[in-house]
Image (cartoon, rainbow, N blue to C red; front, side, top):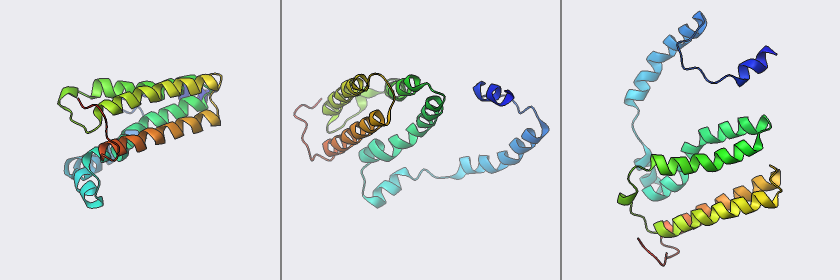
Amino acid sequence: AEDEEDEDQPLSLSWPDTMRKRFTYLLIMPIIFPLWLTLPDVRKPVGETIGITEEIMGLTILAAGTSIPDLITSVIVARKGLGDMAVSSSVGSNIFDITVGYADPVAVSSNGLFCAIVLLFLMLIFVIISIAACKWRMSKLLGFIMFVLYLVFLVVSVMLEDKIIACPISI
C-alpha cells in the first residue's frame, strides 16, 4: 500500500531528505556541471555531415527528442488506466509547445509553412475522427492509426521543406 502511495505523489524538487540521497546528489553534481558547461552543441555539424538541412533536423530528430518526456508521461498515465489523459497529453503538449515555445512566429521562414499549417489542422481532424471511430477507447488500432498519421505528416512536411512537393500558397 505504501508503494502505491509513493507512486501517486508528485515529483519533489526539494533537497533530498535522506543522507544517502544527499550524498548521491553531491557526488553526481561535480560530474554533471562540467558536462553541462563543456559539451558542445553538435546539432548543426551532425546535420551537415549527414547532409540534412536544419529544417529537416528540426522536423525529425530534434522534434522527436523534445517529445520523449511527453511520451514517457503519456505511457505512465496510460498504464494507470487513464488513456483519455494520455491522448489529450499527446495532442495538448504539442499545441502548447508550438504556441508558447514558438516565441517569434513572424520571423520564421519556411518553404511550405502555409501548407504545413493546413496539414497540421488536417491531422488534428483525422486524429479526432480516428478517436471517434475507435469509440473513444484507447486500443492498438488507434495507436497504429495515430502512428500512420504521424508518418504521413512527417513525410509530407519533409517533402514540402525539400521542395519535392510545391506549396501553392506562400506566406
